[in-house]
Length: 292
Image (cartoon, rainbow, N blue to C red):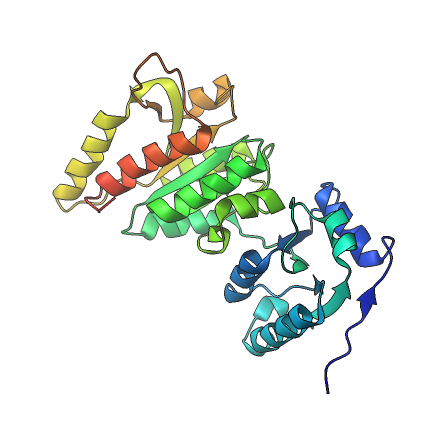
């Protein structure tokens, strides 16, 4: 016998109100996953939603089956969660969606939280890239998501989001990351002072991206030379500043140094995610002798 799902029939439903609270940034404790891919990535990463809204019986039945399988896996953080699947009209979903054309389920979950200090300590022990990418005041959620994707795809060991910038868990950031937010540590709301203090205590170099800095090519060659000798490169945090303004003067002065990308045709700068891709590839990919 087909399962009868509870149906959301009013825009004033508590779950739709909760969606609007997260969208408006008034709820920092929860996160929204929208669409088949993001919800699927969340489940694969062991993140169980509190509830899922679907606009058809077929989709609801599909999600109920997936949640039943996911709930059987050991999730210490989510042991008490019993995810609900509810029906909701396409029109009501469209009114709270962040997509131009809503497609697939809309889920709410507790916002994942990652402590920054254990991440830094783990990178110090790592024999991998030993590079962490950090978003320092990046305002556009899509750009933050793109930075997550760069970090995951090009071999950085984590993406840190500092206070004052967009959250990597913003729905548009999740879409910009294309599912990669669940594939590496993503500490957020880290204060500038805490980051520099921890880096100093752990012996991590902090470098910033800045047009007036040291030439990236020369710096990358230095790291490559260290690796070629069979040595471990120093652990490093690479700061990407706010769109337009870049890093603050205070932050630049606090850095170990700054790095610049050589540009041609009088181009002054690159989009923050594009610049990050160039920098991370040079420092991790080419620097480690890996294939691009």
